[in-house]
Amino acid sequence: MGPDPHLKWVVTALVLAQLLACYLVRAAAWKWVFFWAYAVGGPVNHALTLAIHDISHNAAFGNRAPGRNRLFALFANLPVGVPYASSFKKYHVDHHRYLGGRGLDVDVPTALEARLFCRPAGKLAWLVLQPLFYALRPLCVRPLPLSRLEALNGAVQLGCDAALWAAWGPKPLVYLVGGSLLAMGLHPFSGHFLAEHYAFVRGAGAGETFSYYGVLNWFTFNVGYHVEHHDFPSVPGSRLPLVRKIAAEYYDPLPHHTSWCRVLWDFVFCSSLGLYSRLVREYPLSRPSLESRDSPSFAPAEGTDS
Image (cartoon, rainbow, N blue to C red):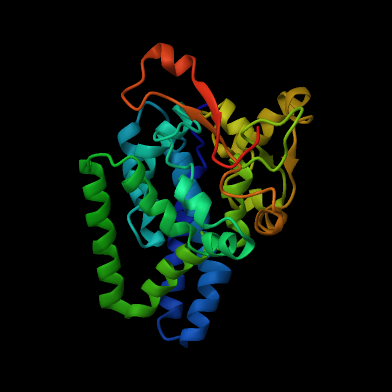
């Protein structure tokens, strides 16, 4: 556990690389702007959102410097193009505390989403629109007051976007924002959204969190080691493979994924999979007591049979 001394330098390098890319695409043809956004800018921005995930657990500067972590997350947010980091931190705490909690964990799709996007074409459309649902679902399911840090996040982000537009025109901004939307939609990197908590496997050994052990972990701060992360949230992503190595007798027998592309394919075309394929816990919607936190009642997501 503890901070990763290399994280801040990796994130800084990615932010500077995106700034250079903005300069390079300023005069490119629009078709190349969108191509590079999907192929390069989007994956880099998706990686930065996962760096923000690590930073939300104080992995950059440690638990003794929460303010530095919060401000550094705003810096990591700049290439993403839309203010994200502070709101993510606010809701992600409850994702860990009340995993799968109806009305508390906004990572869980709503029953309306599950009903509307239940066939292959619908699930494919949901994947394409996934960034929109992730942005709007918290506002519908569990709206929380706007914090000062979120206001600062928005002001800094809009100021950066305006500066890019003024300096190099609209193409760099389209490259950044378009890349973020594309890479969080129908893109190999977005397979982690489904692999982490959707029940692709049921029965003995299956839980509600699954890991992915594949090459894309190298580019996503090891977010695929997700069972390990939920077991030890204070361990930075760079050390999660070591957690698995130390406790191999516990992690190796668990069902896991080896391809996020296969995850996306199965999600769309397997009739047994859908937005309902998650375990949902029932917590009191008021502030839960310590007793209710320790003893949740369990209920399947709508449409499940177990």
